[in-house]
Length: 262
Length: 262
DNA sequence: CGAGTAGTTGACATCTCTCAATGCCGGTGG
DNA sequence: CCACCGGCATTGAGAGATGTCAACTACTCG
Image 1 (cartoon, rainbow over the protein chains, first blue to last red):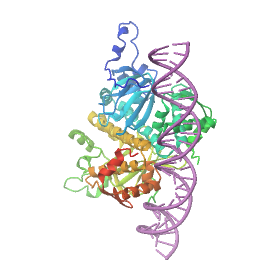
Image 2: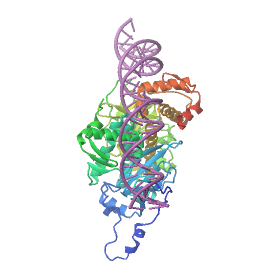
Image 3: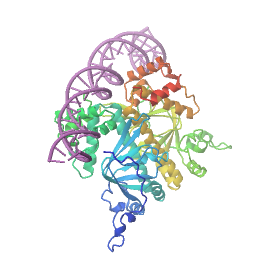
Image 4: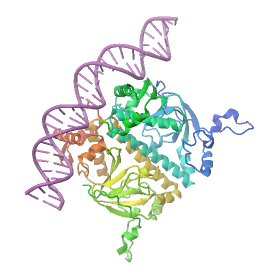
């Protein structure tokens, strides 16, 4: 529940500060560098060479905990950081004048948020934690500077942005030409794959977002989301209990998504 | 009408080759460099410093004519170029297995197409000319190399990609939470602004795309597009004659777009 | 001149939305 | 400890918007 609505300004410190108490330890320094992060193959460093990785390790950035309901940034906030999710779940959304909200994405561990701010120097969307989460706030200017000296590293950044573009492509496809069942199937299959890539079950998971948020993301009302969940359960494709979902018949789910039933 | 369905492989030549017949001219060389292009303030060089512009002028790229219905690239084609529209109109689209098409964008003079290919090294969408057009095929690898030496120039590229992300954000908003009238109003206002930025009338223009293509882009059927045009005409907001559109009441159109009527 | 394409319009079907009632759960305070 | 409240989810009934199918016109191209 979003109790704390206030936007929390990023605390710009180095990782050393976060681990102040241990800095005098005689053994290896506390590892909060990208190269030793367990998410390195999914996150920012994905696809980087060893030398790029070394470069990246010189980058100082803050780790932050974000409580459920807290915002990372809002529409119009100055763009300074991109955020890597270490743990938890976040959502990004856009607002229309009249208050209608459109969720533009959900982000889990190893994914990057905030790239939309580059164009205008200000964020075009708002991002909020759906559960207690932890993020790395990476100063984009520093990252750019680093990349300026290594074209291969620059390429990684470019690819990250392009990936965001293709991600949105799929969502447009979904919003533009699918019915409710196809939308929900696409959503669940996408989540399933992302969990699988992180070593979690691809068949059973806990949704961190409400029916209303799923609906906003998929361009339908919460009641329609709920009904579609029920329909899938009726058909023996899913077992649903509130936010807990088990995919019983993966093939059938994929079939819903791929083929125009009607 | 898309008669020529065959994909035309990019002709990789330098601008000199294109103007072969004039290369011996004693006067100034034929200007096909970005710095002297009449679209420079809208297109790739937008926001570049003088020195970046000089750099950019060393880039060799081909100009190509594309006939109506010809494709520039298709889904899955190897990513080599980004394309700057010099004249005419293009559309990009995605395909679902069952043949459903989702138009993901329309592009006019000064706009860039093809950035979606960076992530995978292959294009995620297909792009086709809606009328006889002319484009610059810019080798992305060369452009990256150029930018590697100048961080300000790198920043321009990054910004272009981010702009594409925010563009798609708006489309998602549209597809996810607007009704037919709001969608068409948003579409026309967007076109109007883009024409205005190019020195054309913002009130009267000729649509280069069919009702079906507009519908696909906006996530509705062609009949609904047609009916919505008629409705706007009834209301005295537009005058429509096939593809010729005149905006009679700009304020009313903006009102449709901004406010939830219902 | 005939065929084909694009656009408009009507009648009807269908899907999703809207509104409303209900149940469930967790947190809070008497 | 339990009653109450608020938020979330489910479900039903009916309304409304958009999709579907079909007919007709206008225009273009051989």
